[in-house]
Amino acid sequence: QVQLVESGGGLVQAGGSLRLSCAASGRTFSTLIMAWFRQAPGKEREFVARIMWGAGNTIYADSVKGRFTISRDNVKNTVYLQMNSLKPEDTAVYYCAARTEVVGMWKYWGQGTQVTVSS
Image 1 (cartoon, rainbow, N blue to C red):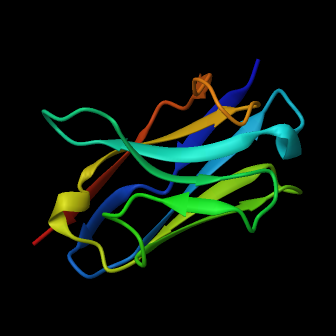
Image 2: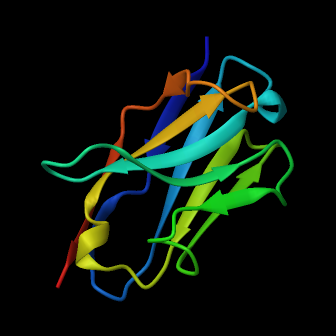
């Protein structure tokens, strides 16, 4: 069983930056594909970014491309989401997710961390 614990959320003004962290345990971290999702009030959960086992293979939602960067540290068993040029529409609960297969359901989820961007 994989446990995921997010941290780093908070309140920031528009244009500011935050870095989210997600610490994983329970499985060899380098075997996990990691992702970030978010859910704004009254909206469905949406994909934000994904990173494969190797740090160079990443994809992003169009809404965050060029502003957010996903990265991972396979020694610290942690995945990060660096968020720059934040906008009020980025306000959401951000969730870390993991799976072991290239395709399929995201099997493991964290509890979420709140990000609020004020205008």
